[in-house]
Structures are given as structure tokens and as C-alpha cells.
Amino acid sequence: MKKAVCAPLLMFFIVSLLFCGVCAAGPAEDAKAFVQKAVEYIKANGKEKAYQEFTNGTQFKKGELYIFVLDSKYNMLAHGGNAKMVGKNFKELKDANGKAFLKEMVDKGINQGSGWTDYVWTNPVTKKIERKSSYVVKVDDTVVGCGIYKK
Image 1: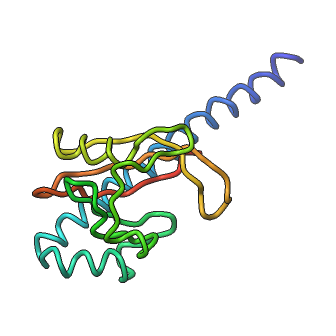
Image 2 (image 1 turned 90 degrees about the vertical axis):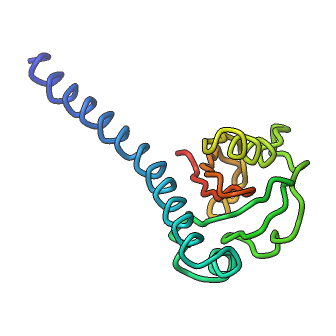
């Protein structure tokens, strides 16, 4: 009798783990695809129009996903989550753990061409500090990025 009960529970557990693994990979792939779409938009429309669209438009905002752009001196050029951040320098901005995450993002993107940076940040939905990861891609002397909250 115990084997009959345990087998379905074990199968449920295994399927749940597999499903969660797929879910965890989904947002990361969405963020990368969103960044690639933004890079293509810059190439097709120019930086000025693209930065305006990223900050004030709607096509580069989807749920918690939005596009941001930083230059090699850590100045925010576009930010789909908070337009007030545009024009400010973020070289010294640190997360709740003291990590200069935007500096790391820019340096990684400029030096490696692309990459992920992990940090903690306040989720505007939950109002709690949560783990977050942002993906950036180098475009000339800037990085174009998108972040995801890790569940």
C-alpha cells in the first residue's frame, strides 16, 4: 500500500521540479529576447528615437520587463521603469548588500559584449527587497539591458 501511495507522489514531485525549472528559464529568455528586440530597434531607428521609445513608449514594457540604457560612464540614457532616472550617473549606486551593480553591468557589457549581473533590489509590486538579475548587451559605447526578479 505504501508503494502505491509513494509512486504517484514521487511522480508529482519530479514533474513539479521539471515544470519549475522551465518556468525559471522562461523569464531569463524573455529578457534576452527583449534586449535583442531593443538592439534591433536602435539599429533601425537611431538612438534618439529608440531611447525616447524605451523611456516613454509602450512597446518595450511588458509586465515587469522594461529596457534601460547606460553609457560607458554610467549615465542612464533611457529607463522604461522610471523616467526620472534618465540623465543621472549611477556609478556609485549600490544594492542593499553594498554591491555596485550598475557599474558591474556596464563594465561587463562594455568589456565582454554581454552578460548577466545578479543583485538585490526592491520589487515595485511586492515592495520587498528581492533577488534580481539583469542582462546587458553592448551597443557602441552603451549597454542595453533588461532585468528579471528571481522567484
